[in-house]
Length: 590
Image (cartoon, rainbow, N blue to C red):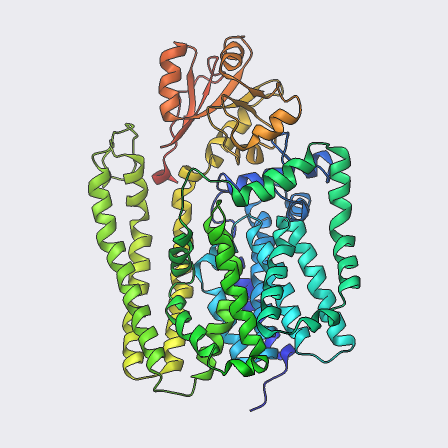
């Protein structure tokens, strides 16, 4: 049967993905550290007009190239401090990534494969969550996906203008990935293409990939900023290439995470579709090795997913977000496998996968129902911060962790209900050997489950953000007041205050920038903090409750509470101007 035109499908796919990834992007605060960090660097670029040297709280920050910051600058220019505007770009690139997978799956296989693969990708938890977070990972993955898909499409084309254009898209997308997250943008595609050609034994193909013009395009996009920032900042080259790229891959992290950590990350990140990954990969390899050239697409997708997994598994530095580029090729393989078996109602592997997915969903239901109650009972004995609560069901002496769990309980139970119904439906459809029904049930369950998960995230705002404290303080500030963070750095604080803050007794990831130039006016040590606190000039300090209690004991009566929540407080060194009792913000009252 002939597939409908691509343009007709895009008419309804574009709004569906736009709504799915864009719905209620402003539902929660910017979370620290990641969202606060990237938003603040972009805000400072927008304010200073310096688009070459990234700065975080006024300190040089060379961890990443600037393309993502430049995108976020446009959000600040158009909407100011707006969570929805700042999350617009990751959401847009998440939707574009799904559309690219659909279009490529349609071209490489058939329209149904493209559609099923796009749905698998969109309803994978890691992909969905990172599509709604202010971070570079989704934008990087979208460019990397575009590069690899353009390459595999070009490999299937005869020599000519179309192949040349697709290969140029490959080089341009790799360059944009490099400008988003560094030289992983060229290293990963190079490794995948090299391994693929080695397996095919077709090194002559290198003569047909327009290497000279492609490298010229790559350098045209990547070289100007790297040369300019190095010219303005002599310390850039060593930190960026050695400490920021090579050392990060090779040095041992304190976390001591093992190579296999990405196995559970993938199991959670592609839940419940991961249950079908092994069968999809096995079926993709069902061809005589002598005829591997006829199955080069499946081989490239497998190499793409496997090398991404192995590359990051072998790195010393590991974060769950790093494995995101492995999801698009896995989604295409899973979508292809479902499409091949769409009309077949007797696939034993598919039924085993459905049973595993249903069992996994029931396991999560058990963790929701049993685990929450266990955690509530365990944390009820934690030391109390004596926080009042408007919720009569929560004791006034409950720990913050217990409070969060209690407030999350309706959402956790909602997630459990969705998964339970999905597991039942999947089990019934598996018993009836209905492959189409299994896919629809899992897709609906996954999408609804992620929506409920996302709806519960704002409950954790006070744990992960100081937005409410910052907005409570902002109207009090006068031009000469100094705002500091004490023994911590809340990376979303400068964003919401729209000003650089003083950081006392903390360096963390700002250490390199502090060593690179004189930042002594606003990056201060403990003695300098205490001197300024006693100077008679108005200061406000953000700190956690533990340090607040210590500060009260050590500084005597010169610590006045302005506003606080379960985790952090704002204090000042002089009596508040307004004759009002210090207030305590409570999540339950909002």
